[in-house]
Length: 304
Image (spheres, rainbow, N blue to C red):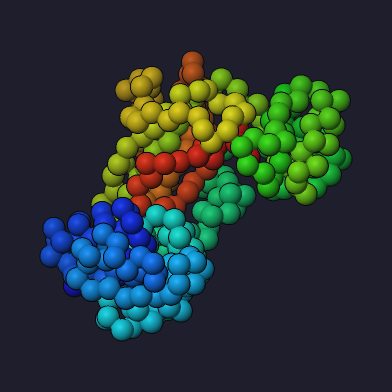
């Protein structure tokens, strides 16, 4: 058990962590910018350190300032909360090198899962079902045609570096592929191509595992709309409402197996596509996060 934890965040997120620490009898250190000195999380913490000005880059994203605060207070661990540096592999690595515990996934796993292409590759290498399509960014139309010949039409075409479905659509033949690719290339230097899974259910499982291999699913979620091109504003319901017991436990068992196999310590979000009339499924994304999310954008293949 840690005696003192520094919370590298602010606002309600930091308040929740501090209250949890108090229940466990753990001393807390709040960090804050100059304008946050009177914030609730600062008042609740046992100690506080000002780490810079109100611009996040000068305070909450300032790794040297956070390291100084850790050294000044003697904190044994850092809880990054959500956002800011919570999924920054470099920050986690610096803490590991200084023998300070980062409460969340390791720098190795953050880096691994932060790269969507790499995460898909790892899942495939471990025998997990993944969406068929481009292994990485597609840079020209000739490469796009080759992929479509391999997986067959229809396909989902989307810009690799765009939000909210911009530049995305379904192509039923080569002519439609050319038209969609042209639109996507207008907004991004690369495009992504996946098999068409329209109508499949879009699901997520939040899994937490500790260093003693205790592993649980915190919750599962179901997108209100079936898989398709949509923005991050789509509705997500927790827990899922339409899964059978067999489907629920099948995906739960897979989620636990994946997290244990990869050795992830902390939280992992696993996103699935499930056929609505069979138990056929595939893993769309693996995503590490050190704190539960109650606000999310879809990161399924339907969204860019």
